[in-house]
Amino acid sequence: MVQVVQVQGAAAPLGARARAVGITLPGAQSPRATRTLTRRLQWERRSRTRLVVADTAIVLAATLLVALGGLDTAAIEVAATVEPAVAAPLVTVAAWLIALAAFHSRDSAILGGGATEYRRVAHATGIAFAVLAAPALVVAWPELRLQLLLALPAGLVALLISRWQWRRWLLARRREGEWASRTIIIGDRDEVSYVLERLGGIRDLAYRVVGAAVTGDPGDPLELDGRPVPVLTSKASLAESAERMGADTVILAAKPDADPEYLTRVSRQLEGTCAELVLFSRLTDVAGPRISFRPVDGLPLIQVRIPTFDGGRHVLKRALDIVVATCALLVIAVLAVPIAIAIRLDSPGPVLFRQQRVGRDGRTFGMLKFRTMHVDAEQQLEALRAQNEGAGPLFKLRSDPRVTRVGAVLRKYSLDELPQFWNALKGDMSVVGPRPPLPGEVTAYDGTVMRRLYLKPGITGLWQISGRSDLSWDESVRLDLRYVENWSVMQDLMIMVKTARVMMRPAGAY
Image (cartoon, rainbow, N blue to C red; front, side):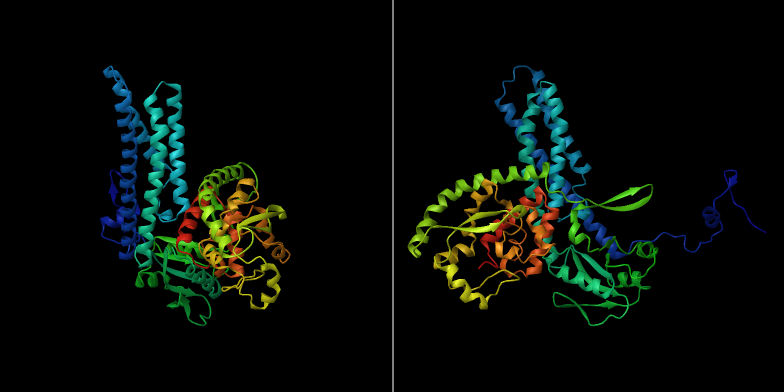
């Protein structure tokens, strides 16, 4: 006999009937979060809460200070004028905080992410400005205009500084093994080794690798920065291994089997154990931020935006170059006098050195530098070629006898490159861009490396903040190509800031 349990006069669902008779259906219980996953979710929530508090405090401070300043200077004759003065900061705060939330500026995925995080904060502030500009212009509301002109720009700077300080704190914790995703990498040995190699070169490590599940023959032991990485050989025990090793993230380096359901099966297997499944593809090495997801009628598509090398974004980049170069040249005009005197006293010859370099689209130009070598340096070059320590077609010597005493100091702190801001103002160069090559180097380029010439060369760039002359040729090319295809104004600003820091603590400069 089959027992049917009635609920409110109708046949109860299967789950309700099972509970009524004390039966637990196998496989019907939802996965419960492990202690590792719970800990991960807790620190993510704490991070977002701290950012909410910091953002709110900054927005309130910026708007209230401007509002109080406006009240002090305004001639308030009737009580009615106080109402719009009080309403203006309230409206600004509400629009600003809503925009910061709407742009997901505090998402866990971008915490400590640098350019992406800063870009979202800037975009949110810009949207708040646009939303508030309409009533400020249409209605005679001078208090709101004051908020637009003073509070939002000042607050944006304060927000970016706050996020930068928060990022520094987070990265310091991650270097100590805290606040980082405990990660297992799965895939073919070659792909897993490649991911480990790339992760080893990242100082801002968000992933702390605790194991690797290698398909097939595990081969030699795997290492990350000289530290052995435990190898897991059983795919079936991936979820159990993740729980045992306290992992909260899995990086899928490659699809191990020709199995279209593998990804779905792994993600379901990790439910309750891990917070995220990260898909690695060598395409991201090229595309980076140009990758986005575009679901079409339930079909998940990965969209890769093809890079463009003209248009409005490049006009904005040129405007940034003009502003930064102009400001820099005003400072350089003061520094140039003692530098020029030191150069002339140290060795005979001109203060400035002009060298032919290859710019955008293969056009050559004369790049300016403070002279750091003796005047007969070019004549001595052939005799020194056998001692070359440079990467690829580059010629570099750590102890180059052609470099003067003053020149060594200028090179160490990159002061010899200051006249290049004149090249940037003229339009031959950009403040940020690929490394400016010599004509002799370009003749050795293949079709891929030639893409470095799609943008103007830069005074600084990813190569400048990533090791400079200590980089291998392949790494230098990879950084330049990544910049050419994925640059953004926010990334340029970050590189400028990091360049200033590198100049104070030079490495790889000779």
